[in-house]
Length: 492
Image 1 (cartoon, rainbow, N blue to C red):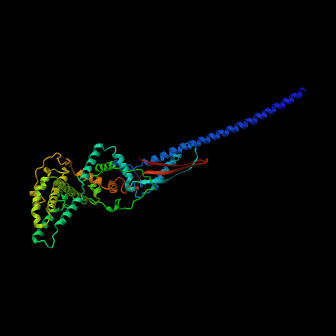
Image 2 (cartoon, rainbow, N blue to C red; image 1 turned 135 degrees about the horizontal axis):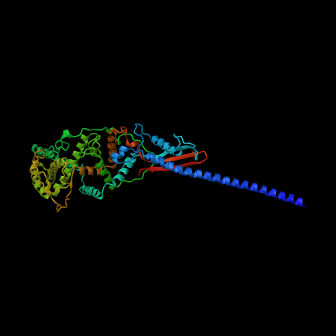
């Protein structure tokens, strides 16, 4: 009995040992599974962190490769897709992104790390551009946006107010450089000789017609030393308005252009571009602001256009001033009354014709002052009229009689006491210039200047520059992990 009990007890003990072994096996299996799951989850989490860092690092690295001279001289940030070569191609940017992206997953490349092991086991990386925006897209909107962002921190409220007030006065008097020429032609038609006119009537009408018109194109007449003007020129066919431009991919529009931002852009041009009075070094054209306004291929032609438009505006402003100066009008009326029965033209028409000729002569004296750096009243009072009635007989030239000028406050008629100079007219011309011409021609000047700088920008072009991209980043590993994400990035 005792032995049997011992045997039974022994069997029971043997049975318990077996149960413990199976239990431990099951526990270890669960533990190992849990460990492997934790390791796999850790690998996935680590891959996600590294992936996000790699995306950000690749984009930061690429956007750190902006054109340095473009930033130093013109304070705008763009990636040159040609990378200082003559082959601009968005694939260049895509290749750079791929290189930087892959380097973040394989830091061992090019090194000899001892006992190195790739915990992530990344087998493949890829970056593909899905959208990118070029500086010239939508009539230069990306470039315009950067300029506005830059100038909004520099231009003060007073500067904005000063130009907007000038524009407001401009609008109130309906000032337009084409208006004076139209008025000349309209009044001149009233003095066209007919077959019924006598010889004397024809002579008088021809003299009045000649009196109304002034050769505003004569640069020497306006007081400019013709031989000191710049002779620099560019090929207009290579400008952004006329050449075939590259286009970005996708619609990344986010910007609207209001009138305050228009002021910012005008001030950017005045601060970065040269003009007749403020010429810059290392520029293709010396009168860059004048080129932006008129778009001619040479400094000479742009200056001729500037003088012509200055004359037409000053003559119109002086015509308005003369009509507001009732004492001047009263002195002219007797001439019209005396001629009315002789040439069969009503006195008011003849009076206005004489006032137009007077305004033209006055305009010549104003342009002479402007191009010598002086300032003139925008709308003059009677005391500020330069050309005397006696001087009208000689009309224009070196023998024009000039009356003494006196400073006049705001008159009872409400004439604004505003004086303007050459740069003020440039600002107003730029302000009213359509945005497309203003932006593209500014970019033209920057292109031309960088190409002659000798710093590797010989082939620089704005339609190969970007400041905003969207790309898809893909990573695959040997552990069946795959991450795909899209990221948009820009300077602003």
